[in-house]
Length: 230
Image 1: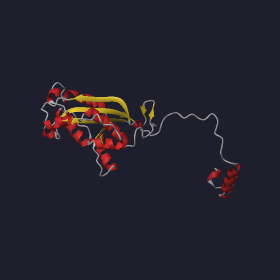
Image 2: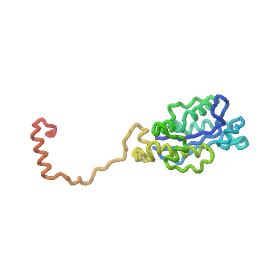
Image 3: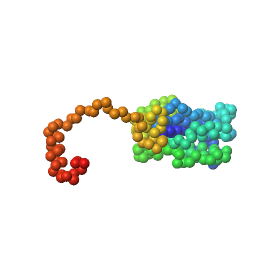
Image 4: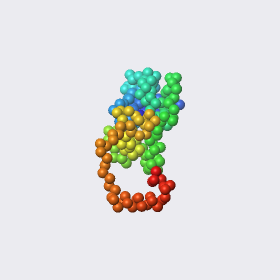
């Protein structure tokens, strides 16, 4: 099963008011394990950066001036995520921005059904608790000391660790669905396809003579129609 954990940085909170994406970061998981493949892109928002947003992520006008506009990187991002489940913290926020950007360049939106929200998972698992990314890092003992400011790639890497803890830790299925690099679960199966070899000699029975005799006497009491007689 392939999943993409991602995060964005923006100029503000509302694309309908003119806010734009300025950074996308994403990491790939395969059967809940990082593969090392990442996507990272700074984006020229074609507008000035509000001071409030700059204080959050530190991405200013001068830095973003020579970065590509969204239209030129949109397909690369879509190719990276493919049909994988995309995991985000407060997914509605990121999905609202990416789909607004896609709409503006004439590309179909990503279905919300393709997204998974770790904030919702955390709220169900820890009702009433603080469930920000920093709070979850403290809860799970995840080092986020490098997170002085928000950054899409760093935050997606941290979120990947948080996500794995939320669903039970790394390799919750003990990698039984991975066979020679293939995603068995993704092929419609739920069992490992590792070939099972027959034993060269059967294991020695641990059944005692007394136990065997007692079982036989019990079966005889059931009559000729007993299942054991078949």
